[in-house]
Image (cartoon, rainbow over all chains, first blue to last red; front, side, top):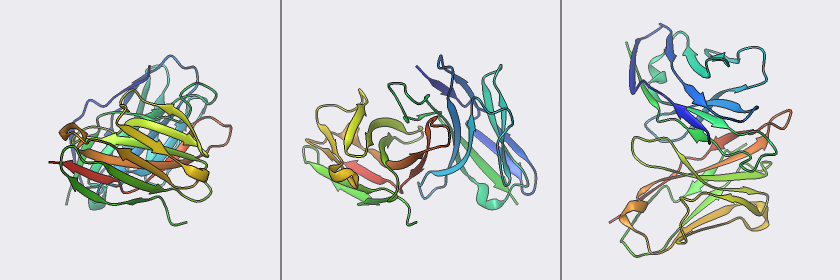
Length: 118
Length: 117
């Protein structure tokens, strides 16, 4: 079974500053994918960034980077230069290894609400 | 690329009624997923299609729930004899394998918010 834990119910950050959202995971699968999604108040889940368990380098996508520490089983999201539009719920998720019985299914954490102050 | 669309966006129904939701995936995506999200929680997996084949169903999907994906294009999720506990956001996602074949990036639709009175 896979489990995602997000221990920060809410985070606050000043505009233009960086913020780190924590995510730890647990799985017995040797290979997996880790994802971050943003969910604004409108409700739509927006894909932000992906990290494969086999990737040697941390993933980056614009202002988003994923701090992947495999030994610690953590996959924290770093948002640099926060903007007011970054205020939303953020979910960390894990996908199983291809070829297993649960191919493609995502397991989500409970989310962290990020509020960006002007 | 028009993205994943879902219809309706909101549905209010009385307990005991049947409801059906539709999802249109991104056209070149062969995988389609349904999730349910209750207030303050992350989405929970319900079921998964690859083309027209339903390959996995969660234990959350009781006998009152049925999903189809005829011809491997759009999908429908039907809930029969709705209960108040079915009130949630129902999210559809479509995906395509990432390079290397390990899992896939899923793109979500706007969801259908169901309220059962």
